Image 1 (cartoon, one colour):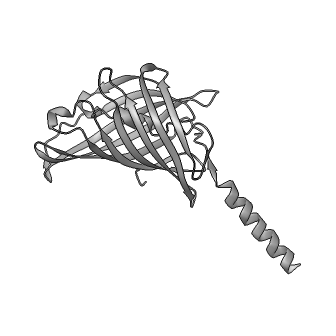
Image 2 (cartoon, helix red, strand yellow; image 1 turned 135 degrees about the vertical axis):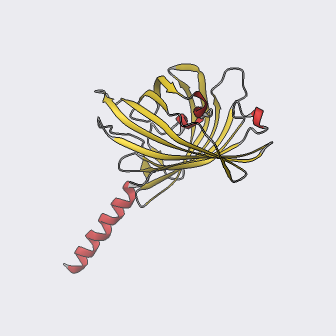
Image 3 (cartoon, one colour; image 1 turned 30 degrees about the horizontal axis):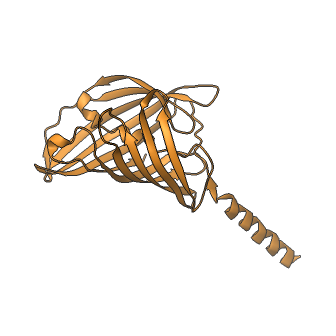
Length: 232
């Protein structure tokens, strides 16, 4: 019986591990649920190094029967440092309303209010979950060819790879070519994303984006970015 019990334990562990070889991004939004993130941007410009820090707070305002949700997102607390020296920054918050699918895709966006400069052309961040609306298998790379249903002129092509699932965290590697501004060359984005498997909640993401529109005036087109869930 002891050997049989050991066999059952090993078999159960094997099944559990096998169940962790695939991942599908599928959020279960709850009305009133809140999330907070820290967002950092770094770049080298004609003026030297520039580092930007801001807070991003989101609250679920409405959940639809099909699992989609309306989110209110507030970007606040922006701080800018140039060559390590913090610069005076207007205290202007930006509020955005978006409708998102349970696979994380932004279905529509509008209702932005506040300081327009704080967006920093971060359109590429909305594609962090591109290609994750279907089951992904560890070690496999999948093609992405997606057009924004709210604005078909905005699109993303590239690949996403489920690199690993460790301790309940899925690690995904994305290489994307994004068109967010008509007439501009695609942005090239290389991104590593960590997602909690059980809830599909973002833990953190980091990467680089080049050919970012509007950055030419700073003498740069490449931005290093990172976004992480704020510790409560």
